[in-house]
Amino acid sequence: MSQEPGPEAAAVVGRVWETRAGINLGPLDLIPDGGARNYVLQIGDKRFHGFVVRRGEAVFGYADRCPHQGLPLAQRLDQYLTPDGGLIACSWHGAVFSVEQGVCVGGPCVGARLTPWPVVVRDGRVFTV
Ligand code: FES
Image: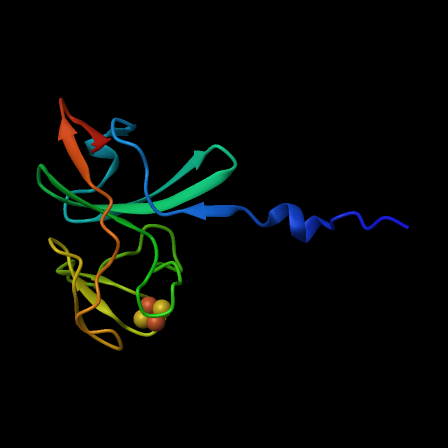
């Protein structure tokens, strides 16, 4: 008797934690100034989950994986920042990270770093680097 994979097996998709350079992520204005936005990219049969924080014309990208326990940071769509917008926050156990460097400055993994996802703005659009 053969064992067919169940629907839960089909739902398991492999993850990657980096992307190639030159991917057009769309207009900068999709990211609210002072806010953040989630991006999910299908790369072959795997997926990349990341987010980008915007500060005016500057952007800071990271893979969506907390160095504390490897969980995606946000439990609500695009909610990657502290209420004042000053730090990146993990919604699970309260780790907070600097926006510019992705270094944990408070919570259970102080000194650990988010995985950088290099991005840049060109002609009003966000691209991977
Ligand atoms: S998984 Fe992010 S603080 Fe624990």
